[in-house]
Length: 141
Image 1 (cartoon, rainbow, N blue to C red):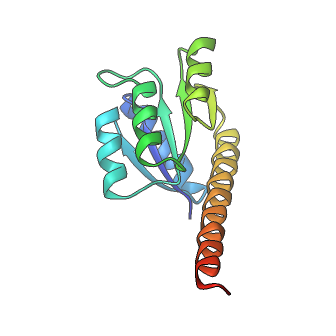
Image 2: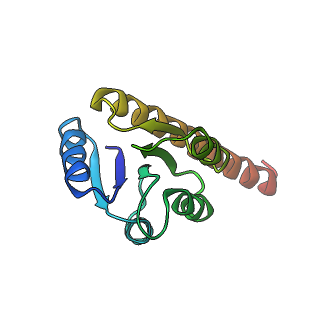
């Protein structure tokens, strides 16, 4: 089951999106700002974070930086109702998987989440393989 953390200050939107993703088989958790998102990730990592760009306090871009510093292979999909090309470019440079304009179709978002999860799984597999190779090399097998 893909673990998704939804981070958005719009409570109704966030709860509705969580319900829609849960009915499609995702395990979701919710945070309403950047600081809460970081706390949730410390409690239990997520495979994919859906992160609103415009939030009070810590912005989505600031939160993205912190997520990527602490959990570099966690994939982040940026969401905004106020999209600008500059913000999208900055998010992508900082490691966001994708950037979507709200509202987005739930089915499209589900596909993006699944693709982001696959990329994370591929990264994890390469890391495991590198660790195995290092052990084998060290043991001289």
